Length: 236
Image (cartoon, rainbow, N blue to C red; front, side, top):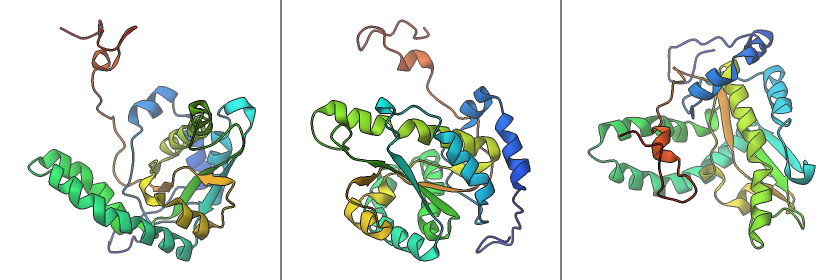
């Protein structure tokens, strides 16, 4: 398939070939995982996506409630509605981000994939929207705060499993929240009942370019022991 606006021809791997890559060593997947926003527009087979979603649900959930669901969006009309909603916010936040990055070529280059994705949002192959059911124990907002922690704590472990699975098979993916910033509109577009809350959106497609390795701060700069500010592992 040729991506829109490009002469490049991309052929997706067969499902069996892609899923065989799940044998990638865990350390390699973790070290090279990154938010991949530039994607081929070739459709993603259900024979690849569904096994990844199934594996993702092996993650733990609070009280083993498993009150999660995935909404998979492929319909062009539905994607266009979500894209329209996203661009309303993007037109506000992107100029601010560009101004803040002015004079920093590295940061501006790092923003380019996100800008490309915002411009091509409705063309991306598939959106996965993890949702969680609200109840007395699990609520996304309000008090006690433990309910907030258990709500999101039950969603993001399977999301991370999904991201790692995508990395292993060669799919690009990224966890995002801004494209579903206005929950009432998202709920209306997707037909979600009020008891079901969309948590994030994960655009998925076959990755363009390389994954990693990613660059991170030295662990000694991140780890504080017993109290904040005590950093015995800093390199001197």
